[in-house]
Image (cartoon, rainbow, N blue to C red):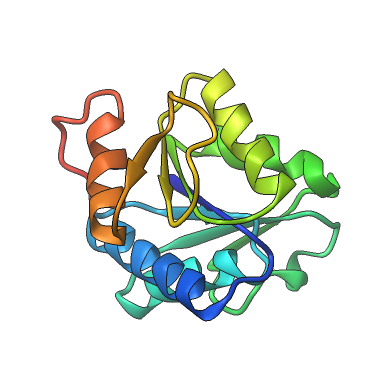
Length: 154
């Protein structure tokens, strides 16, 4: 399970990156985990679904039906931004795209938990964050950084 984190709104280039990441993760056999709403989250789920992947959306409120249309498994956390901890605990690694403070909190939580983080399309908030130039490289990097990465996913 790989979390794709980023803004609740996304410009066209960022949405295209997120969609490509979602598709590449699904093709690699990974489940896409996200915050379940719009922007980067919706684009990543759309990409995963386009190639037959599975998606999990952990929404901030108490109504699972608020998840975007591309979420297979919606989880109502009732925790607002606190859901970021659930997202990161659920994931084996994080791919971070441009976002705001919520995205930064997910990156910080992942680093604090010792989980690998790859940034795409943005800045490097910490030296522990790997940086990828394109979606396929981001997916290859995150999968290679997972413990036991010699195993085949899927």
